[in-house]
Image 1: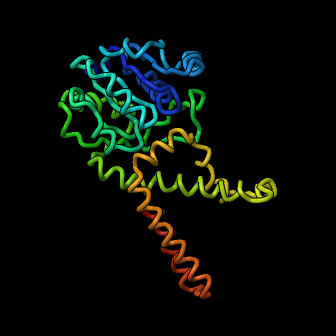
Image 2: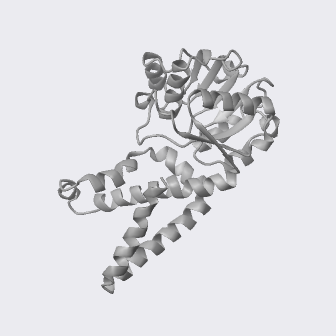
Image 3: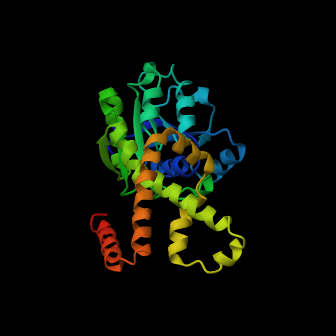
Length: 282
C-alpha cells in the first residue's frame, strides 16, 4: 500500500449493506488507521462494532475533520446530511453511494461542492442492515463518478485512489447520463420485481402459487425484498426517467401480447432470440 493512499481516518455515515461492506473493504486493504461509524439506529451501531465493520461509533459533529466522509444512506438522506457538513475541513473529501445522481449533485451546498465526489457503486444485494455486509462486495465492480469537473483535483484523486485500491473499475459520466442508464439497469428492474411480487400477493391464494415457484420466479422476484424506504426515495428522485422506462417496457409487453393474440409464433421466436443476444455484451 502506497503511503499517499493510506488515510488517517474515514467516516462512514450509514452502516447497512453498502456502508458496512465499505468498512470491511477499507480494513481488508488497510486503507486507513481508523474507520469511524455514524448511524442513528442503536442496533446498527451495536452490530457494526460486533461485526468489525467500524472501529468506533461517533456523532456527526465528530467527523468534520475526517480525511474522508462516506454517505451510505438513502438518497434523500444524502441531501439532508450534506447540508449539515458545510463547515467541514477543506481537506475532507465527501463521497456518496446514492443510486440517483442529478438531484443529489444539484442539491449539494455550494460551500462543499468541490469536496463532494458524486459516486455510485454498481453493486449490492436485496438484503440490508449491518448483518448483510460482505467483505468482497466491491471487488471487480464498477464505480460511477459523476460531474467530476466540479471537484477539486485533490478530492477527486483521493476518491479514485480509494476505489482503485479496493479493486473497482472507475467510469465517469454526467449525472444526467447516469440517471438514465441506472434507470434501465436498476430502477426499472426493481419496479418490475415489486410489481411481480404484488401480482402474486394480490392473488386469492398466494401461498398456493408460491408452492410452484421455480428458478425463474425466484430470480425475478428476488430484488422485491429490497428496502422500501431506500427504493421509494430512488423512484421519487428519478421519477421522470422511471416513467419513461415504464412506458418503453409496457410497449414491449404489448408487442408480446399482440404476437400471442395473433398467433405470430415465428415473430415471437425472433423477439425472444433478439433478447438472448443481450448476454453477448454483458
